[in-house]
Length: 45
Image (cartoon, rainbow, N blue to C red; front, side, top):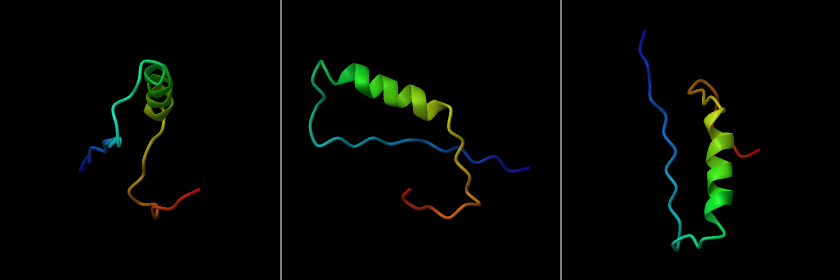
């Protein structure tokens, strides 16, 4: 069985300000529970 590691790469146009950091942490927390499947075509929902 081959295991593929999926990663999230965030490329921001500017540095986050102090008020945005908690929002980003919340987003990352929500994304952690998602499972990405390489068998499904990538698309915007």
